[in-house]
Amino acid sequence: MTTRAPVPDGKTYEALIFDWDGTLVDSSSVCFDALARAMADAGVKLDPDWYWPRQAIASPDMLIVWEQEFGLLPEPIDEIIRRCRMYVQAAAPDLRVIEEIAEVARAARRRGQRLGVGSNSSAGVVIAGLRATGLDALFDVVVTWSDVPQGRGKPEPDIFLLVAQRLGADPARCLVYEDAEVGVTAALSAGMAAYNVQTGILSKPVGYPIAAAPVHRLALAKPGLAD
Image (tube, rainbow, N blue to C red; front, side, top):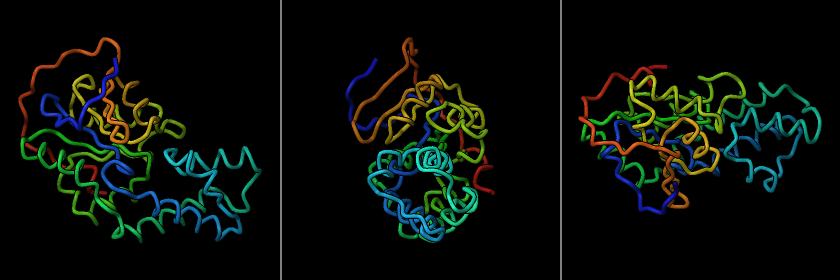
């Protein structure tokens, strides 16, 4: 079932899970510039017209697709990605917080709800961004592409299921905030509700239960932020 809705406050859910890039922060230019620079270091030009339709894909997986279409890169993908992540982390102070969504997280934190981040970016990149923006204090758990098997990033459900597991939350009582269809697909596949911040559409899996308002718990420790 899919309906249009304003940004939900999520207060009736057991836990709230937020995507990072494009949801909590506007990082589009930072991410493109970093990957383009890392590829240029290897003598390869990244075509923005090719990149933007694929921007929600984890960068290592994106470069696998690049090689499938254009042939082997001059350097190993791991080396290009290492430089890309270095450039993204260096630019973390340039990230712009998307306040409308961040305020949802702040209000939920004040209520004592459990909060997590689930991202197709790497752990180092997200943690550097959280610290640079001051958003790190809001979240109990951070799960990224780095925490799941290769090929199991979004649109697969693994990232969001691992967030719920580490939060000790029932996936059916989690609400995910996303900005990309691959993320919405991942959330629905995990049995979670998903709100697309770009389209204003709240989606729920077929047979999604009507959840009663949970009893909010005190904030948990932050194992994901200690890395």
